[in-house]
Every structure is written in structure tokens, then in C-alpha cells.
Image (cartoon, rainbow, N blue to C red; front, side, top):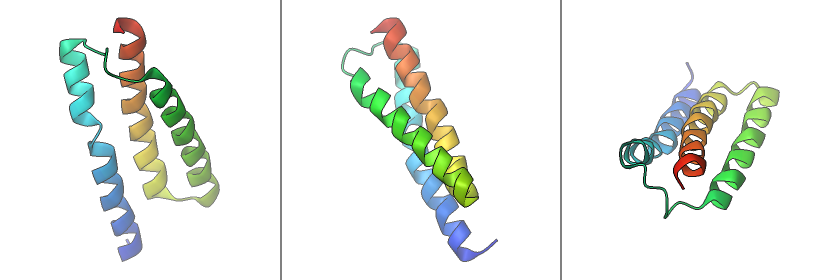
Length: 84
């Protein structure tokens, strides 16, 4: 693995992991009143575009980070729609 790929994977872990506490808190409390639905819809659209870009560039770190982030952001949006 090249140092550039390792750097990308480290960055991916950091930016993706930041969603985990929010997912856990939202899952446990079912409280979504302060979460913006519009922001999460736009974010998910942006993440989908990043996924397409990563596939076209064959960029594993970018793809992995955005696939996991899409799952986490999607979970928050589903909880928002269900409990919001």
C-alpha cells in the first residue's frame, strides 16, 4: 500500500467516524427534532456523487469512506423521517 493510499484511508476513517456518535445518540434517544432533513438529503446526494467519482477513478479509500458515510448518514435520515 502506498503512503498516499494510507493517508487517504486515515482521512476516510476520521471523516466517516464522526457520524458514529450521532447515529448512536439518535438511535438511542429517537430524538431528531434538531436534525435538518434538508441537510441530510443534500449530504446523501453529495455522497452518492463522491461514490460515482470514486468508482470512475478506481479510488478505494474514497469509495470505502463514502460507502460507510452513506450508510451512517442514511441511517440518521431514516431515523429523522421515522421519528422526526
